[in-house]
Length: 142
Image (cartoon, rainbow, N blue to C red; front, side):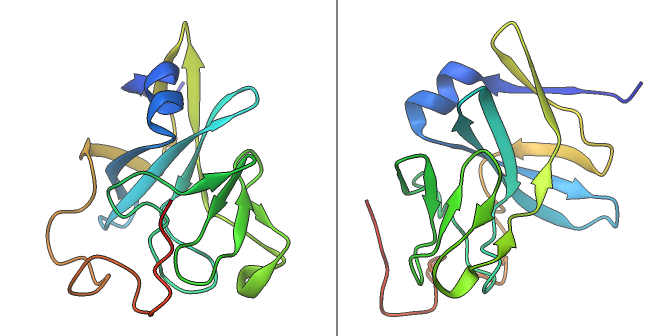
């Protein structure tokens, strides 16, 4: 059985629309992961649009509408439960998933490919740009 790390509660994810944390992948690279509400609890996705390496959650929560995550750069939307995008520049792609489980309202990281580092985003120079926002002039915010 894989190890699991307690992250947060389903209630906290629902109240905040998302919950951001940093994890180290199997190659020793830190990556941001977002927990988002889903019909049956929560899902976890690497915090990166599939079209360009743009953060979906820039530290203020993920912009969401009707159960879909919205990329702040080009407006592509991803189903919060499946990670699939069927529109915009990211059409026909799926977000990279991270395994989590829920037990008694608590969310656990259960993906053997990731180790929890801390709540919140990567605080060092993360390659996202000087202002930690998308490198475009269409900064969507909700």
